[in-house]
Image (tube, rainbow, N blue to C red; front, side, top):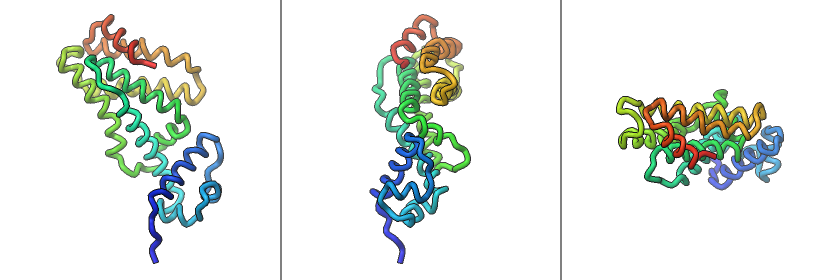
Length: 200
């Protein structure tokens, strides 16, 4: 007889794994279920095994990121809004550094690639709005700008979460993003003010 899938148990296992990551506990099938109060069969029922568990955990990172990005309130200044989205991305990584690393572990496929890619669309839409109102040049590619600004943010926060650089390094995001946006056509002083308002 097929086992019934209980969404609450699936969520419980993902939360347990995320907690184990943050506590730097080794995650094995047995250690995972021991703290969740379920049998090992639950992992197979909900994820098909530990590989599926890791895929779900990787997806959870993007799910939490999307939830964080939706909390960024729209403002009249799209460059400020774009920066606020990038700051939310960085803050999410700093709040969940172990889960953040799993998000980019290409050893495991994502459960829903489209949902993960949608997190970047938040940035694309803000960059497109900045171009529409003339903050960026008409020939500036919103998608390229979104990706470039994401790469700057990802690079900085990855160095900080891996303890290569201190959190003070994040302050450099202001000058880096200002340079990027100025290169796309924004006026330097105006760009810096927009970035400064919204960055970490």
